[in-house]
Amino acid sequence: MNITLPDGSKQKLPKGSTGLELAQQIGPGLAKSAVAINIDGVQKDLNDRIEQDCSVSIITIDSDEGLEIMRHTIAAQVLAAAIKNLFPNSKLAIGPTIDNGFYYDVLSDKTISSEDLSAIETEMQSIIESKSLINKSMHSKKEAVNLFKKKKEDYKVNIINESEQDKDFQIYTNNDTQFIDLCVGPHLPNLGFVGPFKLTKVAGAYWKGDSSNEMLTRIYGTAWRTKKELEDYLTQIKEAEKRDHRKIGKDLDLFSIQEDAGGGLVFWHPKGAKVRSIIENYWKKEHEDANYELLYTPHIALNTLWETSGHTDFYEESMYKPIEDENQLYRLKPMNCPFHVLIYKNTIRSYRELPIRWAELGTVYRHEMTGALHGLMRVRGFTQDDSHIFCSEDQIEDEIKQILDLAIRMLNAFNFEEFEIHLATRPEKYVGSEEIWDKATDALVSALESKSLDYKMDIGGGAFYGPKIDIKIKDAIGRLWQCSTVQLDFNLPDRFDMNYIGNDGKKYHPIMIHRALLGSIERFFGILVEHYAGKFPLWLAPTQICVMPINQKQNDYAEDVKDEMKKNGFRTEIDLRNEKIGSKIRDHTLKKVPYLIIVGDREVSSKEITVRTQKGDDLGNMKLKDFLKSIKKELVI
Image 1 (cartoon, rainbow, N blue to C red):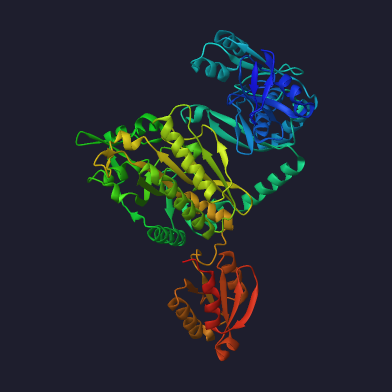
Image 2: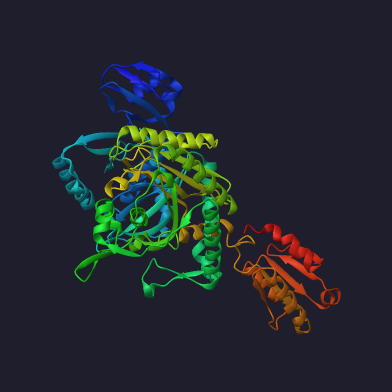
């Protein structure tokens, strides 16, 4: 049996050999750190047998995949076992991994609260110290159902019964505790690979995310390879709590979520609306400079439009139900794409017009479950900085280069300097020919490499309609956020029969590029609030300057200073309250105003100002014109 390794080299192996045996054959060092294998792109347990010629990679504990498997094992074999030991009558639901951690959902006859986390951690540590082997057995549907019925694990029985498969249900057993769980795996070969962990919080979650089902207890945790990684992450969590955009948004009176109007709908208050307006004006200017034309499209459309686009086939669970009007069904739009397609089809297009670049700040609506809503990060109505480019095949690479330039320039303007870029390729199910997929993917690769941009491959992670580039930005405390995405689409041009007339007089389908740079304006605003901890840079701050007289005798001069600042285009407030200057400084520092101008008798007589920054730095006395000259350098637009 021939095994092809990631570097292209070959290994001969007897049929039926395990992944561990392959790792041992390659080298003892690799075998020592191996935790699983990848066979032809599918993750398998280390002791699964290899039955035919294939491509295999060994997954080690120090890899990202290995870390994910470790977290999965902790959730399914350690946290779940600890819960059953401490709360014997609890019923186990599911325990997947999430970004940086894991969770497990349980139904318990006793309340599990954050006060119980320490005891659960202690029990987990006791289980881990055994370094027990984890074994897997395969079962038929009937066997698996009977096994979990005996254990009165109703959720496991439900999962099995709803599965379309009749066999190959994987059950993992901890050798020392005899704890079993149903899981698709893979798991660590033994608990000796488990690294430092911490349970972080307890929350409620509906079974299957459906509010009509029972409420379960969800226990969250995180796990890492080293103690330092864990400590760094826990420090990041504490810092993130301080930066929570929901708290800062309330403190600075930026926005609110009004439950009286329904959850997940954002109300922009004057100061937040000002920042949003600045962001959108900057976005429009950059796009107009980059030769995009701006569009506005409706908020609803006939249901038949979404049937043609395929959204009702692939996306209906995230769409609001249709509303009948005059015997016709309408839906709120979940995306802007089909509307731009209709504008394209409004007239006959020539190859001479291509590429066509259209952009829209289009508000869309998604049917999100109540439990999934989270401040500005997950809402039901939001505005996308959407754009669609219609081009020919030979224009793809140049367009992608220009999009990357624009994306990075705009993200840099918001002080995002570090990125993680992913290139997602053809999935198992796709539309279009392999030839055009390969050509499109090559164009994306060429564009990335021409810009000397490092990227990671996301094999099979593309949308069914085309490959894509995703850009994740790193914020001030090291968290990654998915913002920019560039997707090639061979599907909608075909479904809507979009055409242009080529130079040979024949009709051709254009290539459609879906492109968002900031993503959701609401979500991006939330990211900015947390990135800056509410301390917006001068160009974004809703109030840039506050003028404060020491007492009422300086009010007239303070008004003159305020007027001069406004005349020069700065968003300026004046505080004429009969309060001590220390109190005024404290109040506007808490409001995170970038510059505070203090005027007293000395400033009035010298026609100067005293300047303090939001950080507390005293810049001393200076002429107003000198201050204006210095701060204009901080403006992006």
